[in-house]
Amino acid sequence: MTPITIEQELLKVCPKLYLGCIECNVVTEPQNKALWQLLQQETETLGAKLQPEAVNALPNIARTRAAYKALGKDPSRYRPAAEALIRRIAQGKGIYQLNNVVDALNLVSVTTGFSIGGYDVHKLQGAVMLGTGNENEPYEAIGRGTLNIAGLPVFRDELGAFGTPTSDSERAKVTLQTTRFLMIIVNFNGNQGVQQAMQQAVNLLTLYAGASETETAVIG
Image (tube, rainbow, N blue to C red):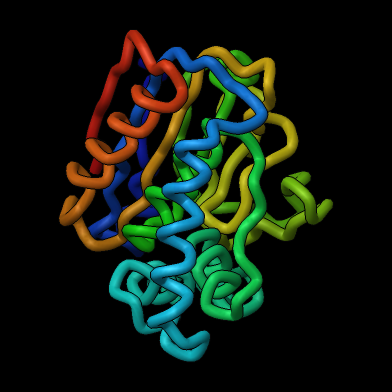
């Protein structure tokens, strides 16, 4: 499995930071209809009972927002990915269908409130470290162009920054050519709920993306 660690400086600010990591072979397809139906059902259920103004109070989202504030980052301007996703659902906008691997990730994120990174392992180089973004550090976020990652929790490999809980990067994104997948669940409240979310993810990836040679680790 790709070696993953957390910088001590980040842990000083966010002492309850834990990562749930899954790496596996996958068969990436444009869509798995059964998985998309599950995601649609969850979206409809959540959208029917959740008001937009209540999203910030969801436990895992609230803890992520608190961590951002502790790092000096405005969580309303740089919304954690899970918050942005669930907010869209609460507003009745639904979510985008991308591919079976990302759809599985999104289903876990929607049901848990965890912000989750998803990366093509073959686009990474060397060990991975989670630290804090620097001023003017280059980062091209998926679908939003240049993102100011100063102060954000940032995943880096030997080539530089490639992931944040706000948005993954163009460099390491999952495409239909992805055959080895790394999923990282980010929890700022210890390991509570991480194992359950990991098991849900493994089950979905196995059923709907042909996951094999699966490795897991909890880091914190």
